[in-house]
Amino acid sequence: MTALFTHDDFVKHEVPLGHPEAGIRIKKVLEHFDEIGLLGEVSMFSPDLPSDELILKVHESNYVAALQQLVPEEGLIRLDADTGMGPTTLQAAMRASGAVVSAVKESLTGSHKRGFCLVRPPGHHAERAQLMGFCFFNSIAIAAEYALKFVDRVAILDFDAHHCNGTVEIFAGRPEILVCSSYEYPFYPYRHLDLEDVNLINTRLEAGTSSLKFRNAIEETWLRPIEEHKPQLFLVSAGFDGHREDPLANLNLADEDFQWITKLIVDLSHQFAEGRVVSTLEGGYALDALARSTALHLGHML
Image (tube, rainbow, N blue to C red; front, side, top):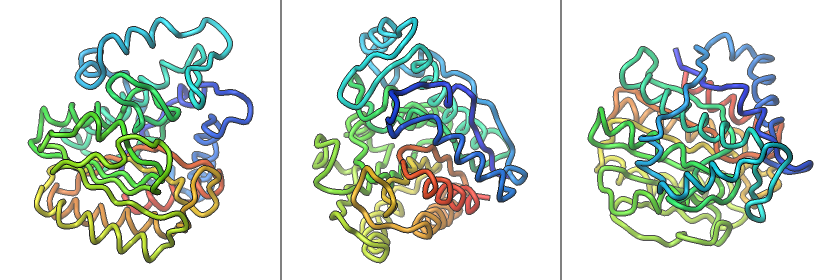
């Protein structure tokens, strides 16, 4: 079976009224999974918190300490134009990283080779010493560092509409980690969009990119590097904000495109990684489209 990692902490993380990255995202997805019978087909796991040592493999100690000191006793504080913090925020961010680490551990040493982490806040914009874009800790990067205890080569595949600036900043020049990212260009986060390295694959998509152009771009830019890298584990930053209904991006993808890319990744995992895939939720802010698309994503990992 495929494992599903989630926790109440991800709903408890509060944001300002009207903020798109709200706890209703998790509730809506779980309700849809239940309605279509998907919850009965997965093994549910409650993730642990990651160790401080593991977080500090990715993030600078001064940055982590500063975040811990900023946690308010009550209310919300604004840390940048997009990102706020409440009393439960840092716990949720740590738990999100713990979920991906737990899923990797289960994939590599347990009985569930594939896992989906239904978490928030997202993580792929978080750099070594910089929060941004709703993100505090880079969960996928922390999990990749953990995976290197067991394997020699990892691929991180990111199909969020926004570029994974944090992930590429952390892993530039690290040949054991291949990072393939598709994203609307030019677009937020407006940094590291053109960072070039042998292990960084940038797939730039114009605003309005439709299904066929998206699929062709992925095949043309991702397949050869993945085949050459021969990853022993696939980690996926699964962003669904490329959907045509999403309010925070300008791509024109449909539900079926997320099913297609999931099938592609699973097929590649059977070719190179004994079927091992761990995916974590990043963006996706149109609630109905998010629920449908994540269901297709998880359903195809079964």
